[in-house]
Length: 144
Image 1: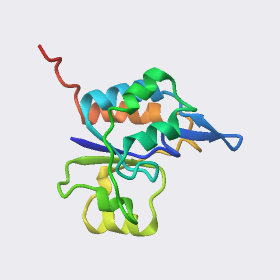
Image 2 (image 1 turned 30 degrees about the vertical axis):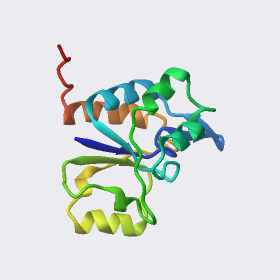
Image 3 (image 1 turned 135 degrees about the vertical axis):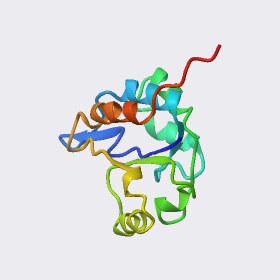
Image 4 (image 1 turned 90 degrees about the horizontal axis):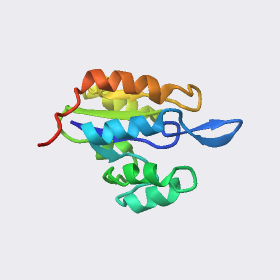
């Protein structure tokens, strides 16, 4: 299953107007990169994972950046929905949809694919989401 991931408001929240890494980010990244086909869906990517890594380097450890580097790039011109797949078997983790993005997912029956997380307002958002994702996707068996 594909998983599309935003950065600001999801992996990086704000505390006293300063960017901070969201609580539980390491177990979250470990789980999603091991159990989903992960893609960046953020303005910081635009087809190149190196721009994501450069953006996140001041905030994340080397081990976390290794996990971040496993996530594939996407690109879009105007709306993030342009990068979503045609099939309906995916998850989109996003803190703030534009009005037209929300209308798109409503009109196409994809509302259940959107997982709202806003670590600016809920510091435990990723921790709570991880519990949900573990029920959505049972971990793959280890390869022999």
